[in-house]
Length: 295
Image 1 (cartoon, rainbow, N blue to C red):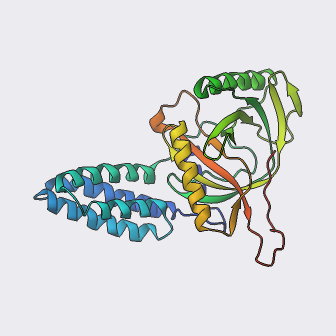
Image 2 (tube, rainbow, N blue to C red):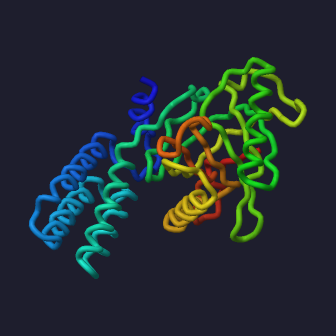
Image 3 (cartoon, rainbow, N blue to C red):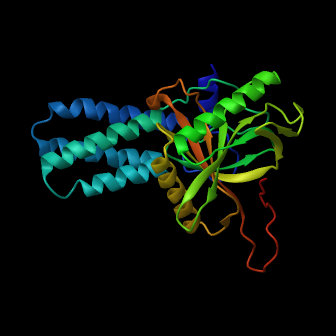
């Protein structure tokens, strides 16, 4: 029930920008793509199979709409398949379409409730501008050594919530800081409290409990491993979107929201990469009306 609720709520983000079409459209397109992948093997010849697949992709792109990142990716892959060796192009395009169909039908595995007032998760492969309320979290520093450092921080936080009888929520937050112009490094991991009314602020050994101000973010939903390469690609995509939408400005460090426990296999894992943003000042130079800030 929690999984279905999360999927339905993905569509209810108000008037803020988003690239994903309604869940029903995503499901319809995924079924059409899957049916063509299954049927294509019966077509005569690789050239005919390729053209049949490209025709279905063209319809999928129209259904997903001009804003959809998945639609744009499918269209670009189909165009690229028009050149080169037919057998190779067909195999590559089929593999790409199969992955995008999985993106369209992916339902996040929800293991814990969200903190009060949190928006629904971002659909896989798409962007959304989301508003987050103020929230309370317990955080621990992540030393150098990415995975080992994350693992150590996780258990410090787990012992903290056990000690204080704090219920687990999802997501878990990983905050980043910029090392130089091109490199970002994880600096802390945090467990989010269900409400800002729970617990007390301050230090508890290696853990610090802090309140985070309300913020607006640009977010992308992702399935699979949340490794460094995936993070960097997602971050580059978010910044490319901002470059095309000058009405929004980046205004804080990146973060990752991880929705699953270490026991969940990579194929079923879901996470979001997010950048705090604010509205750009109007040309008159007046202050933006919706600034976003973070601790």
